[in-house]
Length: 354
Image (tube, rainbow, N blue to C red):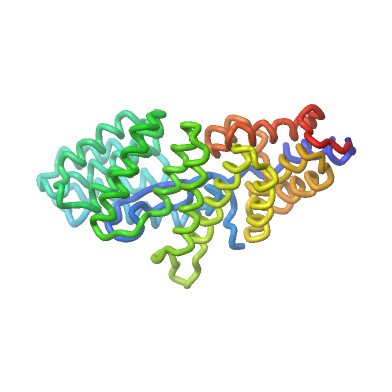
């Protein structure tokens, strides 16, 4: 074991903490069905330059997203409601989810227009999800669905996708998958294109159920949809969000390939993604873990050093096995490879060349 490998763990202890990003959904009856400030792995840098892992949500993006969330509630500016809405916006932007929820509760109690009430329930449900109060969120999504007519296909699709996320929060994978699938079906009936975020989320659910092949197929489909999608281009003409989403979904698919036993194929896919998205810590870390397992110590070192020292967000999150498996959702095989690498565990080497 080289001295370089012995010291690289110490270096990572001082690596910059990954910036926190939000994977938020907000009401939007147009494409995409669900909108995310950031994609599904909460800690990667923009690959165009955190990922969900990702595209990192800047403060401006976050505030813009919340503004859209609140503004889509319509023009219910009865006495007092406008002020409460503004305060709810401010609380949400400051991540004071309890206060935002309380203010939205006041709005619900004041609102007299039955056509608007479902949107307030939806917004409170989204705030509750962000506050990790998933059971209460499930209740609110149910209320919003019960007050939304069957003819409102895209509205119901959006609500189902939101409720599916809440079901994920309580680890009810079957219910989450059913809601995601129904959301896709209703969106299609409403003339909407398949939402790549929803397809990626379905991959997450399959993976949580140990259905690795189905998860991989969903991730590959999501990546393809991101590349084909319209409506992701920014004001300046950039397509960063779309491309980051495509990279993240493809990264998920590569991780599934390793879990399925094809580590050689996974390495090839990961290397290709890393070339396409040099700012992806995720694939650099994954390559380090697999290279080390293959006995390619120097190559593992190089990938890890690049991830830790040359990408802004750094590699520190990848030393936390709970974050790696529960938040980033690496599958068991990849998590084990990473742990062996971090521990410099010779027993974790496959075709070891020490």
